[in-house]
Image 1 (cartoon, rainbow, N blue to C red):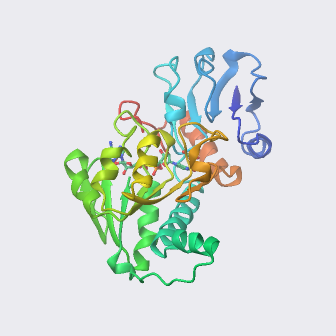
Image 2 (spheres, rainbow, N blue to C red):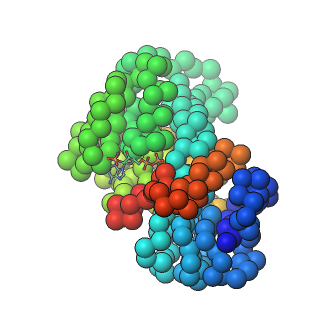
Image 3 (cartoon, rainbow, N blue to C red):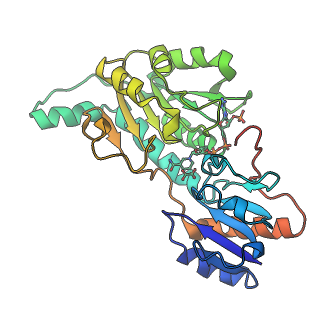
Length: 309
Ligand code: NDP
Ligand code: OXD
């Protein structure tokens, strides 16, 4: 049996070396060197080429190299009935929380205004806001959003959370579903997006969402670019409805060189690095899941295709 590795951003070598030690009987194949398609039991993938998975007739599982699986579910020829398995933390939570904490502090401590002032040589002290007077709203309270709120709370911020189903997290005021969204947004001064991309969440960061935030609110998007209406975001920034945006993910990646986000004074751009796949921290989860599947057990991180995450 073989495992086929497909990614245009992750290096295959650390995976090949680590899997050779843990699963010596599994052949490691790097796309396009598929070998005999009928021998491929596992596909370890990031943004697989549409149709690739359907060409592997004996696939036992599709293993996402990421926490999100939208990149797999997008494939119009995705084979039915093959389990899709995602990364559950596996080194991503610590990185996502670091990034989001950095973003919250950036906006909370007016770093954007101070860097604009520095460029103008303008020495001016802005009013200080104590953390308990600042409300951070977190969309998505799963593995990654949950880790972030646990790390944010000790800093003293008021923390709101929004999820699909009710959640009870100590210290977090919870909202859920469409019915809870407006009240959540109305109080959120710094919005952090940790949602999976699904048909229900696509475009959720829209002009109408921005209009429901308090004037001058800031957003941090570390989930998926397709959550954002990019024109609506630019308009909200230019009208002052939004005070700033820190963006790690985009509708088109790499972000095109002429995209207005690159030079917008109130936008921070990073190249989809809020959390990176570190093979060393992920291999044991992949190995454990392959062993579980081989024993006929359910893998950790099995995706519910109907829900889309
Ligand atoms: P989880 O599945 O653990 O959590 C998802 C959360 O989103 C849950 O709380 C879920 O609600 C909530 N949710 C899903 N659909 C809706 C909806 N329609 N309305 C309201 N809430 C909803 O995912 P993870 O925390 O592991 O990952 C989250 C996402 O982060 C990934 O899908 C990926 O897109 C992104 N990501 C980005 C990275 C980057 O580098 N930029 C790196 C890693 C991940 P409920 O609890 O009720 O089910
Ligand atoms: C993920 C990502 O979903 O890296 O893990 O974007």
